[in-house]
Length: 299
Image (tube, rainbow, N blue to C red; front, side):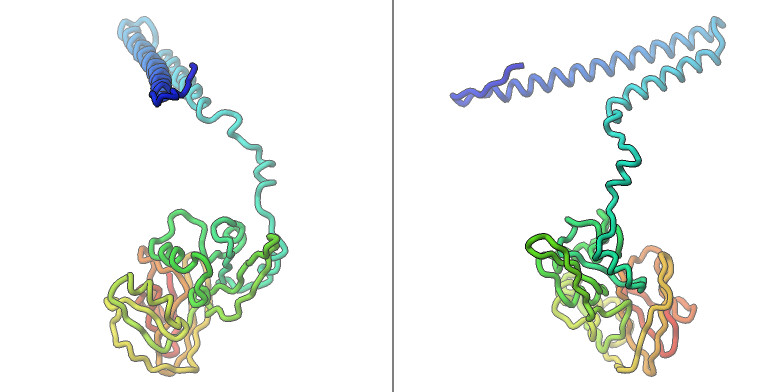
């Protein structure tokens, strides 16, 4: 088919494209219709032959099954040709291998910390070998995606990095060389706060966490607070991570006056519960109340 542009502003080119598309679709539709008619004719012929005792039912079933398999095979080959299959050895060679920076991070045996790559989602190696602060999933929780889009576009917010327990940052020089930057200010898996700041809406919550000292203050929806915002801060209070697995996280707390503990986790309400000494406690928006001398467990 010859196509050309009309210098006078005509639509020769557009009409040629539409005509070609119509011809292609008519050909595809016609081929499918003829195939369907052929199958229906074979089915009807088989039923007729069985009813007239001209052929055994088992033979008809076997013939129709063979025809169906051949038809499926022919259609599948159109969409899944041999060129789309890759040998196992080729896939193995494409898998990321740990770099010197990855090997350095591997030395840290703490199960909780996260790693942040300034290249963002353009580099997925971090998610392959480590717990990435950005994650690597197209189905992130909306609340976490909002956090990423607001505070990880450009230079990341230092408070957010610390709250997410980002212990290592991977940066790159102008020549593309990677450099590992340890972050000793990461808050860890959980910590006591000295105050609670209530907010009315989710928008206010998202805005507040970017301008608040999250080490000392927890941002909590007003509707989630079951007690007052005044806390008896105990500087000697501590919380440590005792167990960390895919389905269960356990913490040990030590405090003389109790307090409010923040967990560096992405809370998901469907199926997650907080327990204090084996009793179902309070868990909302990554926060729960810790009592003196009790162990906390989240499952």
